[in-house]
Length: 619
Image (cartoon, rainbow, N blue to C red; front, side):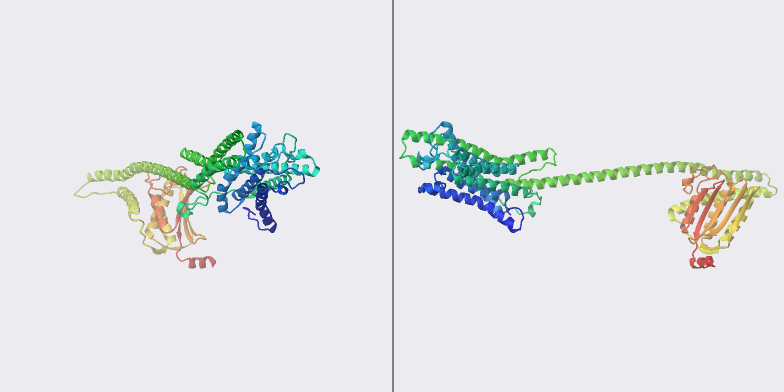
């Protein structure tokens, strides 16, 4: 029905009646107009002895019927061509109504004894229920003024158009209904037939007002059911550039012709029609009255209609100002289908591009800011790490210098002492003196090897020379070799079965000896327990548990890092090298403090032949 997508037969019938009603009203107005021209009394008053429909009323009904029909097409129809034509048809029809009604009102204010109709067609003085010949009833004049007001609101697309249509429709229908009831009850006052004050409203005038009022109420209901048009912003090259409505030039031309030709025809026609029959003084007064009323009507109509054209421009100007001020949330509500509407669509699209660009820029700025913040934090971490490495390096150099000096000093001292014992080019050394030189030379060698190992790891990585050997024998040999360095009262115990592993023998021995040496160095009393076992992850695990002072909690998290030590007799390289050796084999190395006393160091090596291991475990 109309602009609402109804498909049921009842709704289609209602839509047909809404469109047909104003056409029927215009047809009745045309019939009565012809009745005045050809003097057919039966058509002027269809109620025997009742009031006649005035000539100006019939003309106004023609204009009102056409106006309401095109109001329907403008407000509630989906037929764009008729909606566009409405903007051309509504102004002249509304102006015709305003001209006739304003002249009637002006003549009433000036106290004229005759209505405007007598200047077109003559009405007898003794016409029933006619207080002033040629002037319609007050209710009739008011009804047409309300219809013209609704037409002006429709042209302006007033936001309150639905409420206005409903209110005006109810008012017009009520006036027509009361007049019809007056005829039914034979009460002339109800149809405005008051002696000397108001002319009576014809029965067919009352019925037509009821029809017009009902149509306008139904139009307001239909208009509410039509969803508000959503502005879909598309790219200019992707949407149709042909405007569906009228151009601004056409609208201005229409207004210009309406406010010039219709008043000229109106006043000129009356003047020519009465030039021969009326005395010059009376004609001059009538023309003056007509001219005054016409000037007021045209001025009001032109201002109201021009505002309907200026309003979109002012709305667009306001929207542009708001967007230029940075308020991108503002919306330009323009439903014109002319150049202004096209310009508004282009501006909406431009605004959407600006908003999208700003959002993208803001997002990029936020991303870059976040990246800079992340980079700053990372840089701060790197700087902190570099400072820590610098501190550790200085500490290492100090410790390394001290450690290198310790074994060199005894060797130099012994060499100087031994040089004085020379007899016949021979120097005699005792076993203790030889052991002193040997131990310190070996200690110096180990320090140099550790430093070289670290340099090799960082430059070339770990290179392994794997072969199969008994890990049990390696553990036992290492314990035997280090037993001379064990303090009195400390026992070194070993538990475990015989296991074979494929690994780099010398490097695994280096790890084991480093762990055992640490345990021996820090264990003053008690026992050092060394164990060898396998676990469910197909790994061999070597564990060394001592009863020393344990690991300093401050150094435990970075125990296997380079230069990590709090000992005055160590470089902190041994465990770092050990970690790299074990991880190069695919194993793990870890350490923890015991619950009672001391610490436990352990490392694991993968068992290469897992099938044999699993068979042995099953057996």
